[in-house]
Image (cartoon, rainbow, N blue to C red; front, side, top):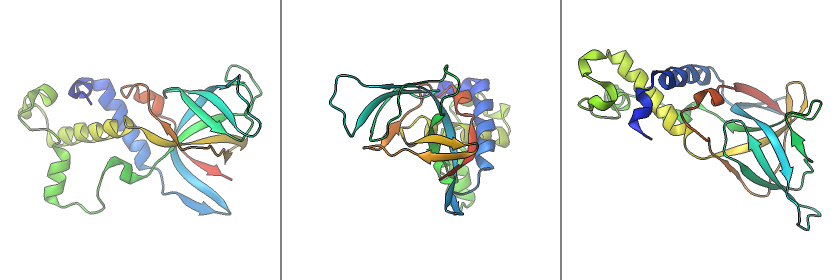
Length: 201
């Protein structure tokens, strides 16, 4: 990750807002035979079935989702052609399951650990923070927290493909292989602001 990303005040501010939203998510849990899953949601904008293949029991789809690089997904489910521009269609989404450990924070931190986490770069690195005297410790910790989140969000992750059943209820669509997704642009934090807990049947 380029250090210059954190010189962009808007990126830092959006990352800290996202941190706050993620902090308020609860832990995943089962209730009434349903999974309550905290996650970051990436709405699917297009699903296009691959042509020219003998697909009787398996179907390959080209998938586009807001904020993510394009994906190819193979499944036995029939998704059909999908475009967000067509009203009345079933809603599909890719989600990134989330828990607090994704920020790389240990369960127990002592004073030394806090200092280490707060300062991922040297205090002498003026290219990131400017003069050390110009920032209060809280500002430095905010930059460090934003940097940890941005670095984490920029990494590939295992996504789940969901289809909406009813309002607030979703069903997972199984794929032949793990769905490994990655954000297009880690500085576009606004594309990752859809944070919620979904009820999966």
